[in-house]
Image 1 (cartoon, helix red, strand yellow):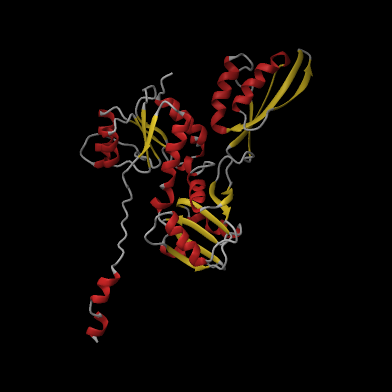
Image 2: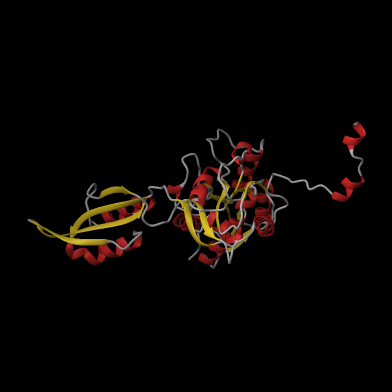
Length: 359
């Protein structure tokens, strides 16, 4: 069977359901035909002209990116600005584009889990699970259809479906109930109606607190062994994330629990401290956010790109593992627009002390 864009899109949606994205976000297939065949995929963090040119040179059929190219409504597509050039080139070269952004941030084994594993944390848990993404559904159906119904429910269930008998004047009915992720609800309704198991409108749907631990924001984990001292941890981060510099505030003794959030996650810093973390690693911290009243707590900014780029390799690995017949590569382009200048200490030693000259 030939692999189409929709197959890869569906796979990504199972891992990172679109229903978990932030309201402002734009995820899924942004450019391309869902029925187009795919033989080669490129994964990346950002869509830039360099990445698109790389995809063209490599004869790529589909790009899977973390950051969406299109956020707001666009009124024209022409090669007069960078975004227009990118879209124009994608369409002209029959290259599809899928974005998995805040839904991948919220996914188990998503951006923050990958960051935590890269750092070397274990016993990983979501830091914030204040999502109401699960639904409980109930319906009554002919008990003679129990086996067929159970097969359908097991396909969509987040947990094993529960059922019990209800007798009424029309004969024996069996009441079925189950938990599922919200994004699965339309497909379940469709198949139950198509198979004449229920009539339209006969499915009772209730919102519940997420009982399946499949989505959240940020991750908290345990340091290896006896943990790190403050300096050891900062050195460890520079090595594991290939950093030239780290910005941080606060002080910590022995660091045994660490919380992380890929991208811009400083809004979770108080939750991290309350959960017992001695350090919180994220990116894009603003100046005033560095002021923290927490004792024995480090607030660490490793950079937006640096905290998220490890997921590019995991995207490549997961897609390649699921679709053996597809060649999947990760971009060679460094798309980080932020540069860091590290001064040459020998050069500085040779310069006159300007403060002394002025005095």
